[in-house]
Amino acid sequence: MRICHSFIVLPLALAVSYSTPPSSAMADTSLIEVARQTHEEAERYQQALVDLLLLPSSGLTHKDKLKRAHKASDLLDRVTSRYQYLDRFYVDEHQEQQRELDSISSTRDDDAFGEFYARLGRIREYHDRYPGALPDSFNIDFTSLESAAGSSSIDHHAESSSAAAASAGYTDAAGLDFIDRMFSGEEMAGRFLDLYLHHEAYLNLKGAKRISYLGYIDDFDKLVGPSSNIPNHTKKTDGYRTYLVELRKYLDGFLRKTQPLANVDAISAEALERFEVDWEQGQVEGWEQQGAEVFGGANSQAKAKAAEAQGEGIWCAACRRFYSKQTVYDAHLKSPKHLKAAARLAQSDSPAGEPSNRSQNEAEKIKLRIRSKAIAREELVIRTLATHLAAIRADTKSNVERKAALTDRERQAEASAAEEELNRMSALNPTSGLDSVSTADAMDEDADDETGRVYNPLKLPIGWDGRPIPFWLYKLHGLRNEFKCEICSDQIYHGRKNFEKHFTESRHAFGMRALGLPNTVQFRDVTTIADALALADKLRKRGKEEQTGGMDAQEVEDEAGNAYTKKTYDLLKRQGLI
Image (cartoon, rainbow, N blue to C red; front, top):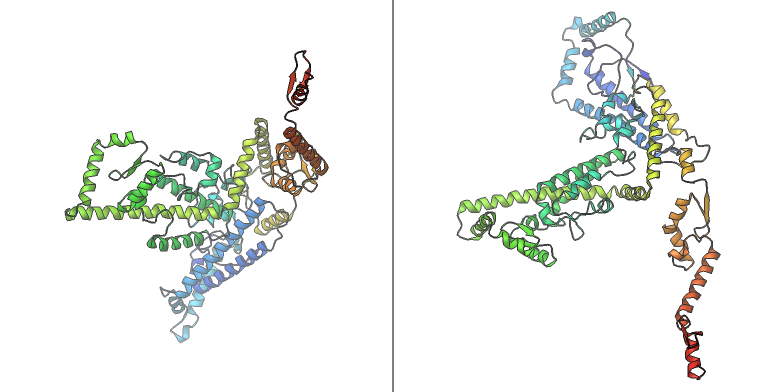
């Protein structure tokens, strides 16, 4: 799409390129003409969005689909911004339309076209000053926001526009396009979560149960209830609040980057609206007492006793914390801090306390309630976002388990393959990829790239980046060797490693259950139904022989040194032959 027409440069048009030099004459264009041009821009962006969404998606890799989604999200943002401008224009709070109509209207009958000729003269003066100026070209260009590609932190308002608009496929000097720079290497273009830093922050929380990274992937959203690994006294620390904020920001940003067409703001707003209602009714899970169960208070004594019964620790109502052992609890009773806290507690519980102390206690309770509400709000948002990342979460766990099972040689092979792929991309993109390109040609090239299939004449497996793996890696893993399993409905597995791994997977276990056989280690490497049934019959007979032949398994000798089974020896001895 390449349309040429002449209009002024609007501050609203963030990602549209213009070739006309600025001048004061062009700034005098009618506001009505500006509104018409804005309508035209919105319609052209809508048409570009329709053309983008109608492109066939068959054969596209995960990375290409994500690029297309970011482009569509950016076009939606541009259409929205145009209509927001038009909405303000038609509301006309500052009476700009009326002033425009007054300026083009003439009060003199003999000079009805005075304003028209004045504006025409300014336009002619502009073209006399720039005789070689070309008409402004309306280009749908994504490169103007490329500078936001390296930003790891995504602003709340710029998330769906700046991060998405630069994802048109341009690459930098290192051969990395916008999607590669948007995600970390562990995230692999949005396929997996990268929670290593948050897992480390969790382990640094005082009192938190130490779990592995795999366990953290399963339990990072289990913040309340019996399944929570974080005790109540840990939630009172500032480190826990910081941990929640950083985790929520990461999940929110990751969801925006991987699902650019999803309304993440609506997801969070719905959760927060439900939270406000539940908080007032005392129905927020884990915060039914609105913080009293965490920060202490009269309502928390019953829960403190229950926690002591479960072995969580010994509760001190004055210090509002648990102590792990009785000796530690007894030792702290003589500390000045405990004595002061106990005095304040006794003074607050006294019905004849001073009004100033009562007001101070009430202010402290309000402060703790506000703090508790902020923590509970962060926990709820994290749980809500985690539900929308369930599939990626499961893939992340599988990927971590796969990496843990790799040998050192296989890890080096993967690193070498990634480096080779990066060098290949750098060779194909020697420049920064930000040279001026015609929008029509660029969109046609993008369409060709998106609709074209990946060249794979050797039928190599597809890697995580959507491209065939190198042939040397294909030979290294022995993927040319095929293993057929009749129990898995004649499924063919490529490579010895995949073949051995499939014995513990659900497909093989289902086939064994269909045959009425247990999927135990004795049946490992058995792939035919006949062999499996024969082995099961053999194991069954051997089990019966071991049960009935326990006596035959024992051997004894007579005085002459002759060996007999225990059963034969007893029989001969009863007959008096020995």
